Length: 412
Image (cartoon, rainbow, N blue to C red; front, side, top):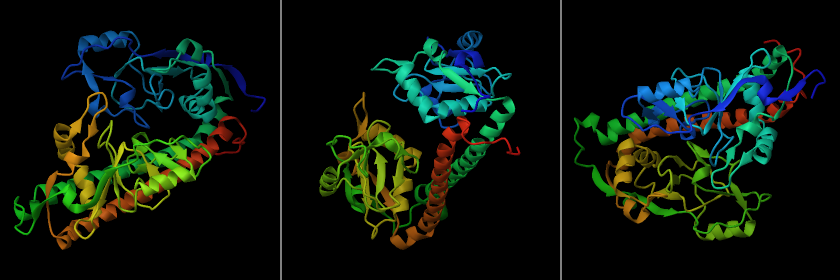
């Protein structure tokens, strides 16, 4: 760290360090958003499933300081992912927040929101917070009164802006790719629905040559991963994924456990290794939240919280099955008819295998299947670029935020 940097505490560089409401008003059908950690995405809140509260309750919470302002840094402070979800709030919505989210408002005479954000994103800072400013085991959480005393170092505003400009540029490109992928995914879902569910090209009626099939009819295998979870072997090159490691288009390899070579071969023998073109489905907990096609053959194993659908490519194009399972109406049908358990809901595969749908001959599938495949490949290209950019950002971040990299000559 450079000698001209100032070291103080988090409380000293913020005009506000607080959290959201410690009471939870009742939900209403129409009202004002009340967000919690479950509504976090990487760069903001997803309000599509956010609950709402009455105007009276909302105004009360606003007066108590539970409504963030734009440019506040928001941190998930309670639960299994505490201090993982960190954003600069820039959305137009003005939600009230629950106490599971901390609100940090910078003193702009000292630091910028971006500098605080990227400092908190550093792996060393995350570890320090978890080791020294957390409490609880059943529900771990950050203790704000202690967190305020965390040491915080910073240069002058000009240098802060130059430092964060590098990471911000990378993050902006990542967000552009995410938006593109979301649009591509929506197009693919709409195209599938129009063709395979609404039968739009056929005046709303399935042609006579189409036949009703079950998932079991079009797959050579429908199973789940291992019901045995080997011990973690961090130095091993063999990852083992669970549903918590699933992302929209693939696995997050940074969060998974690893298993020994011997355990991997056991998993392979028990057919818990996904193959190329297998469709992997979140089966337990957040069932059907994440679904993707295995685009590469890798030495990786999966646990039983993930299901494997292995398409018979002589009968069905993998993308047809993929976008069938992603349809909102199918997800609702699954939730209503093929799920058991309340504390941990899960898809019952022996029942779900019987799910029936209309399927055209293979040559007819190709007309739309080729388009769906092209969309999926473009999404994968964008995801690969996101991973490269994320890796670059994460490599540069600690060097930039510690002053190890000189940015004095950077022109912004």
